[in-house]
Length: 164
Length: 175
Image 1 (cartoon, each protein chain N blue to C red):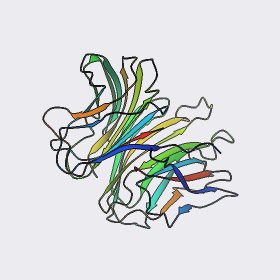
Image 2: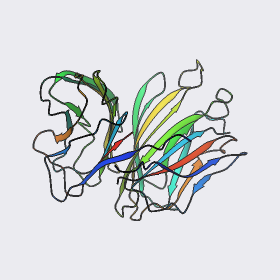
Image 3: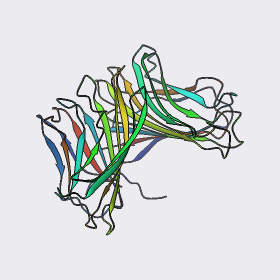
Image 4: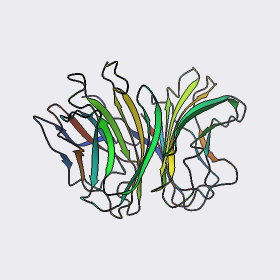
C-alpha cells in the first residue's frame, strides 16, 4: 500500500484579528504543500501571498473568476505578491474557503501555485481560481498571507499547512 | 513529526444501477473531509447533475455559485436558499460509452456548528466533438446548517448512478 500523505506541518487559529498569517521554518521533506484557510475578513478584500519574505517584483498570476452572473479572466506580471480571490473575500456573514497548492516547493526551479478561493454568501459572492508563479529557485521555507488594503483576518480564522 | 492524516473513511463501488449513495455515521475525529468520485448516470441528459443532501436536511439551507467552461463558453451562475445543492455534473447515457465524470469535493471544518463553506471541482471529457459535451466546473458551496456533518447523500437529479461508479470519502486531520 502506498504511504499515506497529508502530514500536518502547522495550524493556526486566530485568537484575535491579524493583518497577516505566516508559516515559517517549513521543512523541505515533502513534495508539495497545501495550505487551507477558512474564515472571514474585516473589510472584504483579496489575499496576497509571498514566499521567503520576498517583496521584490518576482511574482505573476492569472485568474479565472465567476460571480454568479459572469465569468472572467485576468493576469498581472512582475508584482510584489500573488493576489488571489480579489472578489471572493467579502468580509460578510459566512466564512470563505481558500486553498493554496504549491508544487515542488523544495525544488530548484521557479515555483507554481494554484489557489482556490470560494465565498458563497447565499445570494452573493463568487469564486476564483488563480495560478501564480514565484520566480525564484530557492526552496520555500516560509509563506506569508496578508490582506490587500487595510483589511485583516478576523478572530476564529483557521489556517493549516500540510506537507504532501 | 506529525503523522500523515489522509484517512479513508469509507468507499463504495457500485455493483449495479443505484438511485443514491449515502455516507452515514461520519466520524467526528477529523477536521476536514475530502470526497473523490468517478461517476456516470443513466439519464439521457448531458450532463447529469448530482445533488447533495447533508444530514438529511431538506430545508432552504443550501447555496452555491458555479464557474463553468464547456468547450464553447465560460459562464457563472448561482442558486440561493435552495433545498439541496447541485454538487457536480457527470456523464449521462448519451455520453461516450464507459466515460465517467470525476469530482473532488473538499469540506473544511465539517464538525463546525456554524455555516460551512466548501469547494468542489468536477470534470467531464468524452472525446466528443459535440459542443458542450465536455466541461470543467468549479463550485463555491455554502451549507447553513448548524450541526456538524454526520451524513451525506448523493442523488442524480434524474435517473441513477451506473455500475462501476466509485465514491471515496476521506478524513483529514490538522494535527
